[in-house]
Image 1 (cartoon, rainbow, N blue to C red):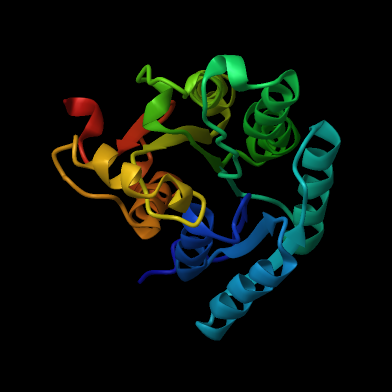
Image 2 (tube, rainbow, N blue to C red; image 1 turned 90 degrees about the vertical axis):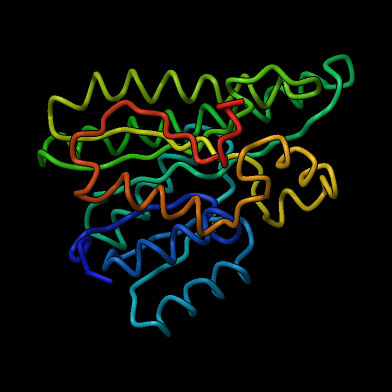
Length: 248
């Protein structure tokens, strides 16, 4: 594997498990100094140890990402550890599901704080600095549910629909200064977070042409593509990585 990202720093939120962990490992394998955030220090240290054992460079920052202040604090720590941030992967997110009438205002605020507010203020902190340097890459992690109306998914899906619109707006805002902003839209993916869906995850996956659930590494490969030179002419895109789920 080439060290295309050698000399760069990549911040991956929610990098201790699932898609975030796989992304941290993938970007470290490309030569990036990966700063990964999460709530569980034990899992964070495990990911860092695995990356370092493979010859990569990584640091963990414990972060409860709930508001603008926590986003700014994480950006500051990433700068301290890496000098500057060249790649930002907004992966951290929460996805409670259920009937609209059963979800509280607290649920609503929590989902939008983590899924929308935190990415917004991380980009507000880091994208202008990337633009000043004339280069950078940002990838936001969305979901196929942002484009498909599904019962019980109104809250989660709408938060990710907001992320997809912000992706396009940021591409228009920062793209002329050399910062590429894109998103990936994963389909059903086997992670610790989706384990609670049980057989329902497999049932959802069988509706797509691939007919199976994705591994986190398959989503991470798409993210790696979007932050490296092979996607140099890709801006403001939402890349479906869903086994063809949106095609049917």
